[in-house]
Image (cartoon, rainbow, N blue to C red; front, side, top):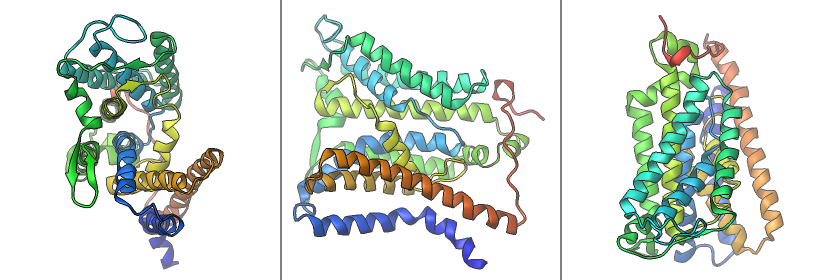
Length: 357
């Protein structure tokens, strides 16, 4: 039936219809929803989620996923703030009083290094990505607890510390909205760069190919292993950037920073049209997913929904996201068969990730 051809496209763009419906629901349900301060709060909440979701999108498109992002965010933020605070105490500061720019560089480098280790274990070590990223999540979270003895790291203003806080705390005036955090345009810039890379650069075309049909991608000369390592490095880098934004916003890092965040990240990506099977997804769709989840959370708070039910609703959203992804796969397969295509099984990654001729 011809109508089946259009179902995957409708499901890929369903996010904007849902977002519109949710927006109207909360406008009717709360007279405080459509106000400048609430709009700013929604965008502010979306900033950290959006940046880290971009990194997850790159990984998901290759057909993999990164469970360690939330711990990468927490540990990089903790270490970055710790070396900058000029007080000697394991739970308070290192005593180094490092310049903010050094702290930021260390955080980003740590994120990239964590991503490379994960990618190397998967490609060189031939290890399952679920086990590797789950283990890394637990290892990094354990390091946070061991490092701080269960205490938060609090910041002290000194020297150029304003540079560190700028991304998470600084605001600028915007008509009607008032003061908008710098983190919001920073998030939009990350989405724009991600869109350009996926749409117009060879790197983007390669990871779509790897996620869509790895066997064919390797046969065409794409170094699948290298691309997989690179997307995990991008994921780690953006998780660390999100850590900078979070630490800068509240000038402290709690031991549970980022905990449980990964489920929200997956929901935002999948509702936004990224396939868990790999090979599909756009940055515009993920942006819609991020805005949807931020809108729902803020709207429920304004309507004074009890926190227990908020958790239930979050769980239902995750189930709904998985359902939508399953329907995309269900309706796309018959279309591919009708077009004479087939979905070849993914080939194993050659040793070292190199494509073999």
